[in-house]
Length: 194
Image (cartoon, rainbow, N blue to C red):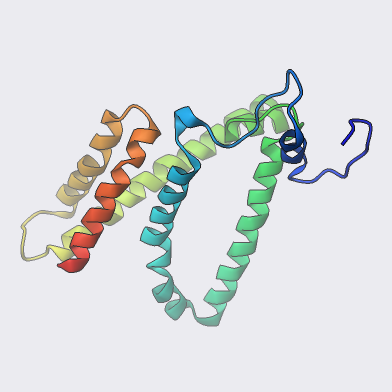
């Protein structure tokens, strides 16, 4: 395809241009980055998260929500697909550079205000989800161990924080952290057998 031809912009236009051939001075927009992990590792991590938290709780949520819950689930699916397409479009916004973070997307869209706004909300979500996970796991373990072990909710929450956080603190990169999924899968299998 010659550079003089006009093309209709789409979310895949930057990817298409670079997959046809990389000219000199153009950035490499491929998603595979050998030093930072692989696509297969990302796939397995996403499957573990979805199978562990979303898919296992879905039947109970649908039973409690009924048809309205199913409609909201389908609406959420379409909203997720649409926002994913928007994120891809923003990441490859000019076809020459690939933005590396949500903060960069905010900065290119709205300047410094966008950078700091996105940083605040992104950090709040990351921190909030982690705290909610620790609280939920601690209270659930306490309810399962009630009568067997005499520890409070707070003690179980701190135990969960330690068990989950210490390996993450000791690992240098997310590539090493992804290896923990094998230990996680083995632990889940052992819990199912008991």
